[in-house]
Image (cartoon, rainbow, N blue to C red):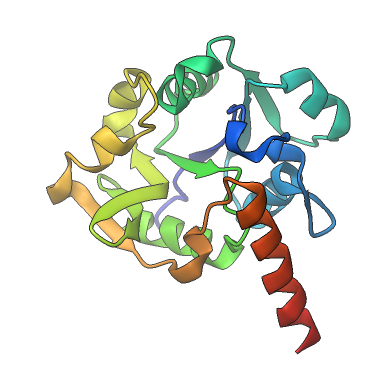
Length: 206
């Protein structure tokens, strides 16, 4: 029996969501808001630890959310972009946990993601523990993505606003891409948010 891999989750919630004109992490969704629902989704799969990287509006967000069994990491340089926040979060995690086999990176603004899909990423990783298990966005790979230990150092070196795209698109041979269908929709503007609400409302009434 193979031992379960140790996987930490890093939920990226540090951005200022300028295009939303509001605090995206706190936008009402299901029973609470984007951030808490993302955490709930992740909690349904059995992983070693869950970490949330906050940055913009960190105090307001922390004041409005009750976090249980979650490690909150606040990146003082969040305004340098998603790559910087990923690197910061990974460094903090690795200081605390050096036995990790993988780190699963998720975004706070993909509210349609299901535990089932995230579990499938973990299941594939168990079979291919040295590969990145990423999400297929047509011609490129994106997050949610699970990075193996041998790329932790690369994650720590990320900078700027491209998130993990550089790694995801330079490791072609070492990536397995999974299909998530419409779950990869990310919500960046009020318009997209309202479309999401209308769509889910319609789905519940039919």
